[in-house]
Amino acid sequence: MKLDHYWMPFTDNRRFKGRPRLVASAKGMYYTTVEGKQVLDGLATLWCVNAGHGHPRIVEAIRRQAGELDFGSSFGLGHPLPFVLAERIAALAPRGMEHVFFTNSGSEAIDTAMKIAVAYHRLRGEGTRTRFIGRERSYHGVNIGGTSLGGVAANRKAYSGILMPGIDHLRHTHDAKRRFVRGCAETGAELADELEERLIPLHDASNIAAVVVDPVAASGGVLVPPKGYLARLREICSRHGILLVFDEVITGWGRLGAPFAAQHFGVEPDLITFAKGITSGAVPLGGVIVRKAIYETFMHAQGAGMEFFHGYTYSGHPLACAAGLAALEAYAEEKLFDIPLAGRFEDGVHALKGLPHVVDCRNLGFIGAVELEPRPGAPGARAYETFEKCWERGVFVRPMGDALAFCPPLIAESKHLEQMFGTVAEVLKTLS
Ligand code: PXG
Image (cartoon, rainbow, N blue to C red; front, side):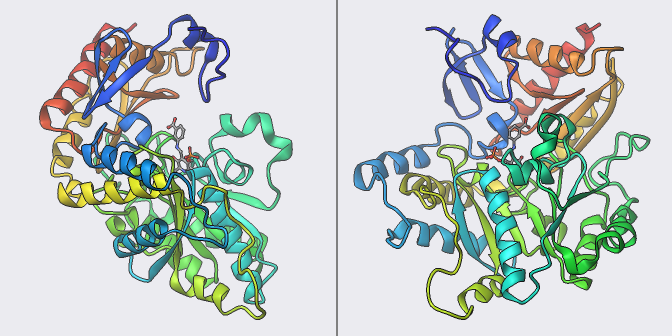
């Protein structure tokens, strides 16, 4: 097999192809590599596989659906599955969030949410509300809307000239002086005040459509918001008629011990974007959950005809919906959103404190990170080497700059957490 033809996404292709890591199959918590080695999946692959790999219920649902209806469109012609799935999702969503628009990915969900926000304001006669506020170090996918909203500098750098105009950013919530915090920091909610004290006066609320944040910034380095921060963003948005969008592509589907971060934090956004865990990663599926009043604004708009000029060929794809329904059934049946081992996980992350190079540990629910001191002149090198050595020892964790991220499937047992953190600890002791 030649490795040259596949241009791998978000990958150092030259490095990878010189020393490839290929998995052949996966079951439960483990991959089997093409060489036949077992590797523990400490990142739910890419923050997705919440029910574990090869879940029989999900596998069987996809298999059955492929034979029954391989593809059915949702453009003016329907099939039952997306209706059923939307109803199930609405039942899990925060109160009053009753409608679901399906996409195929988180990136598409974000760009869809941006269009919903702008079109909603326009329908209400507030067509000047076209600006968005994102946040530094947040990640909202790779389409132009999400890249522009996002605040991971490396993802923006090459495209600076083609990013969307009309987007400003809040400061990120990470205070590098406050280290080894378990869960949310007690102080720092006032970081949200920047919205009202700086950004709204600068742009004027009448020009702002929405504020978009990932409740826990995951790929930005696992940055956990301070207590009260999200509630304060909510208050400010409500005061100024600005929509609040939670990007729950990672925090949704049980990651924080509730269906959504919105419920974990007790803060009700207007739109929620989701993807990844909705199918436990088995088939691409994303979407936007929409507050009832917003949906109804579209449905009550004057004039006949299409209410929202937007959609993807594969919106509501039968295989994705079948996988989504099966994943939700698995989550409910196995009570996976309870994550009873969240305390063990927290202890495991923070037990890395004191090991060589460790400068911070952070966690919430079943997401965590350990931050390493960068090697002088070689940012990210130490974390990358840790990732490679962990892989060699049968554990997959993901480097993100100088941090390593942990995000195991929700089925993880104590022995898996011990293997993951134990291997990382061993490797840290060997590093220069
Ligand atoms: N929002 C958030 C919060 C995400 O984490 C997206 C949107 C985009 O989703 P799609 O399905 O378009 O990829 C994501 C995706 C990493 C990494 O290195 C994280 C993501 C994607 C790729 C890499 O942590 N998250």
